Length: 269
Image 1 (cartoon, rainbow, N blue to C red):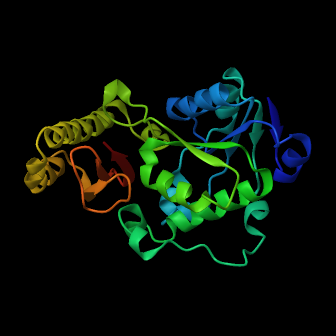
Image 2 (cartoon, rainbow, N blue to C red; image 1 turned 120 degrees about the vertical axis):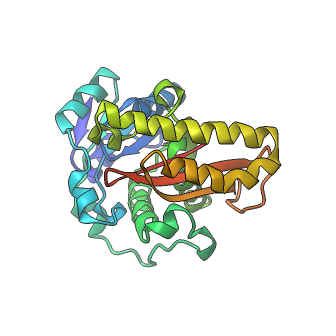
């Protein structure tokens, strides 16, 4: 694995006219990230993984300060999984260039995480824009756990870059809670709370698949979730194609965001 600390150096050394896959991360690599890398290695000749903890994606200093960091462990894992290139860009390289037109989220998209974390997705899209402007991989691999992020990135890059987005399934612990870098901030006892939350949502998901009218139980589900000890931020059912509230048994997703021990978690089923 070759490590680059500059996007320009990566661009000079790697031929991006070939079949290159790109996996952007904020580090604290786990099995979820590795599943994206596996897909990239399967679909592409070479794989680039980036690690950059983007401060623009955080809404408070506590969250940014406490985000898990272990670069040496990440490098070992990426080498073990035979990643071709690791990019470790500096903040100035991604933010010193002022965009001619500031990236903004459309009003209709200011829902779910975009509503509760103003500026978050603008920060995400700024970095994706800078990456793809400079390196232009064939595919960018994104996880279903961050489905709203996948939706916004896919629409943002469509007709603007040659890069296409590729959605990879959420990797779960015992088919329940989604693997996340923030899980590393919890102990085993705490993780059982995440299991309880996921089990409630999963059961609700299958009840909706069976009968759409079970949506009337949404308030009851919110009550059950609060009884687990979490601080629920939102629980919504949306059309997974366009994020409207017009749903059917075939096209819906349940989206949840909550805080537990002052740590924010998101998921969808």
